[in-house]
Length: 422
Image (tube, rainbow, N blue to C red; front, side, top):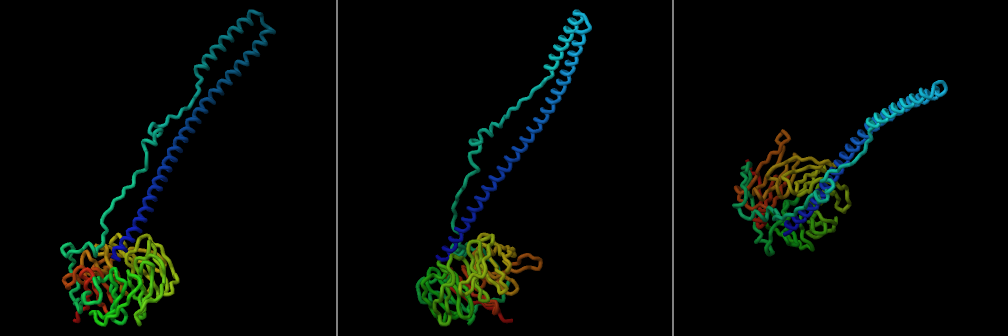
């Protein structure tokens, strides 16, 4: 139930991201529409300026020619004045008649040549009716689909994809079933190696943790006020847990509840060198045991599982893509692995060489991811059904001893695997 709750919370953050993405697309579309209208407006205005300038030039030429012809007629006026003084009335009358005829001919000629311009804007019919031809930018479609929870949906062995192990030197050392432990309907959600060689178990929909040997003996149970959704080993003295309210500490010796470290809603947790790293919506946060925030880093994806290395590099599996990103101490992110096994993979451990260990309920295996020397991912299946485990829902890998702890049978069994001695 806790895993379903976490997946639902993660789906909510993805839904929020999708909302932001769609709103951004709409704004970008509106921006492109505005830019296009600005462009065609500019082109139309430039075209009109060009036409107006041409018309002004033509009309200016007409005015200049008309003024020149008017000046020529003014010269005839001076000629008539001289004729009044020296000529007879008959000569004067004939001259006036001739000038009147010529002036009339010029007026007709000018009127025939004179051109005036007018402008009219003819908008596109579709543009006038744009509120009906373009009633909206589009529509928003909402669909629903089943929540993809690997550990829930892969309930039948026939429905799982078999992965063949590449490492045949793995052998099962011990296994125990949850029906041997005190309590009803115990289903293990997480199991981790402790520094003293014991293991700690947390359970689905149960407010407790159990510390015991790898075969289930030497059991010590701690009742809690909350359900520990995720667990990470802090040091030899204690572990840290995620719950609905935030991060809390559990002391190992003696086994008892400790202080609240940080409040908030988080998805995954990892520890290294007295630092705690938690993931939330597109953000990673580093804090110390006192809850003091050391650093916050925003990322452009939603982390599913995380692993904090000693050099402060943070490995993250992605919530919706079969991919692993690594964030360096400067906050720069890069993709290092893409592989089918990483889709909805559960848990993550990274060794000193940068090899990534995880498990897949879909392919029912524990696998390792590494670089092949050409900056390409290479996946190696470490164990699967051939090692007498089925319906894997979790794991842990001990970097020092190379031991593997596997949660199988839908959380009803925990098994220890070691390398065969050669």
